Image (cartoon, rainbow, N blue to C red; front, top):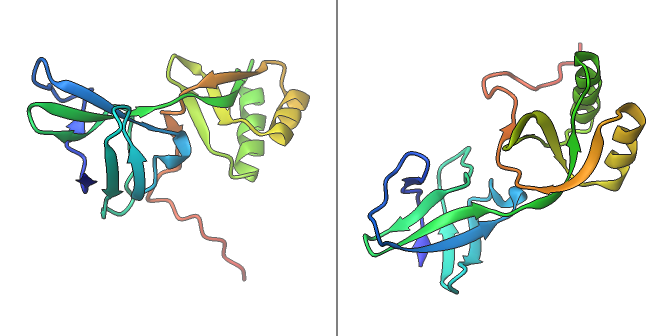
Length: 158
């Protein structure tokens, strides 16, 4: 089966009752991939080819719905570093260090005061040096913190 567009998302789309639900499991780093081949939990092979620029999958996206069966995106948990800054100054230092490394940063879906970074041993060592509240957890990276799309990130040299 070839998927070329998203049909909606379960958070704002009502599916018919008694639909046979199948899931495609994606890791956080696959959410921006527009072309890939995946197999659903029920072993249905999917070819995904989304042409939209700036595209990103979201948890609970509906990839297919024919009234009998629906295929839903499920973002699976990943090993992460959970960061809970104790103050605004700690938060500023964390953001500075993560931004310097262009590290992806997420908000914990269950705790908006907790930030998540995909696990990386050197990053863990760095964060433990500058923060008290750091731990390794398994979490779903579904709420990315991203820069505004209309802000230029070019470096000008004079």
